[in-house]
Length: 217
Picture (cartoon, one colour):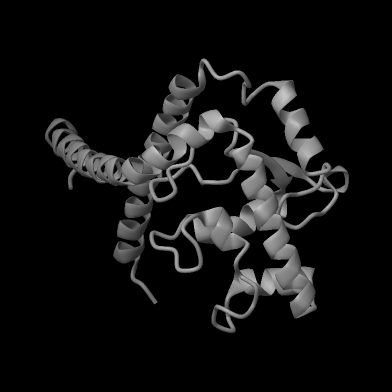
């Protein structure tokens, strides 16, 4: 069991990581607005949501559940983090069920993917034959489709359907490859710089507080 000091240090590291990740998310949202401001479809408009629901038959693009009978959430195919470098733009935003959105985060949060080059494609590649027996994502899909044959077919079809959906947004296709090659490196640096800045500022403020405070340290 960790001692209290170790737990405090761990909590501090997590807090600094949360701040850095929030900054990355803010940057990606601002970048998304700048890139897509002249596109013919607006990601936050009713027209785009209608296009998504019509394309996927108002079903979750991953598990095919009826979104009318599920909790539907905005889903980013490429997650908006420093590894996936996703954008909030048409072509990368879907409407999915909350359960799949939560399950997909395991792949989205990995620095290195082994099943595919993107988090969403990796999520749909856990067919129960490529991972260890303890893989939670493989278990998730086995619970959805118990038959290995049916599971393999459904996951492959869903992956191809999403690829077709993305290809229907040429403006996104034009910028996606260029960004995915350069953004992760820049975002990793931003993440590291933010952590360093937070550490330096916290230490500086603590030192000033010690000097100005009547509290004994």
